[in-house]
Image 1: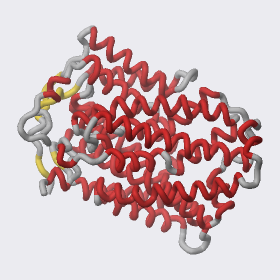
Image 2: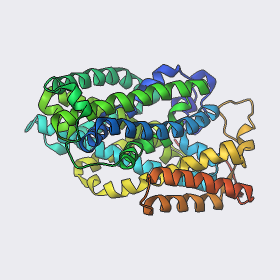
Image 3: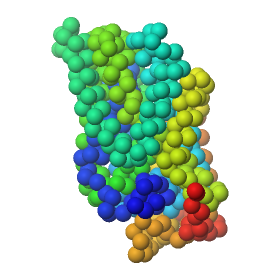
Image 4: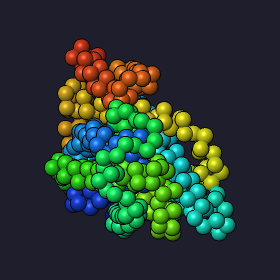
Length: 440
């Protein structure tokens, strides 16, 4: 077995022989989108919106997310490259790609720790006195780390078990709660909490999975065709957003509360424990997996060293687990939310470069006999891209009207296309990607 294949092609293209059937990847996508977080988003919408308005919010938000996933996902499928690596030839250059990898790494290892802490709190609430919360958090994080160490295969195995289990248990808890109410009244009744606008609701839906949308190439590089990307996105995301999200809306209306975890655990007891753990496991493995790929790209770009994916996963999984156990990551929430507005322009620039401007597309299209090999060179850095990225993120953060994620995304596309038409998208310096030192 080659190092690239054993390393899940962290710094190489995925060859045709390693591509997989779309349905298995769709199960992973559903597990990532349709996890406990989507249930919580649905409950948040249901607490502040009527069922009809919540449906529209989910429709608008999921359409935005699916368009991003399809665009960057098809790029990842065509080129067989993960997000952090792909960024080198889709507008960012070597230095910009390193920054993209670092942003992904910091953001997702943060969410990995926070999800571990959430699961630990739930476990401690349901089984008080059995174990200290910090120990629950550490054990949960290390279990996810062990799964991710096996790479895509281990994560597929986890998805095949947890996704059906999660669906069954969600159906059980929802049926248990809704059996106490009239369904017609829940569908037509007013929201139980303070009113939430349609735009705000759509923003919550889009913002909840925007980082997951940006890292779509990490998953679609294993797809066999563009049509497979479309099928898995429509199936995985639509079911995740609508089935799980709308279930959360109905439960919030029935229980007159937005605290979905409390509702689930109180209605079905220990079964709620399994829901929390299984739902969080499936999203947390992708947090760690994509975080690792981002860090590998960052270190490779700056130091020319090729880190081993397995050991990088283990090290960062342990770090995330320890930080979660120490309770430190709770202080990083504001910073992680801020990173959320940094990610949409990444997708906008990648899409605008690959499909419209095409300044660096010829580098990707030059392929030799080795189908796993990277292009021989990449621009060292692209000043216009870094300026557009920063400007779009700042506008998305400070402009209060509309949906921030949409604002920053669309602005980045417009600015990059204009810069391309004006001849401002030019690389400075040349990076030779073949000069890679393999870490022992």
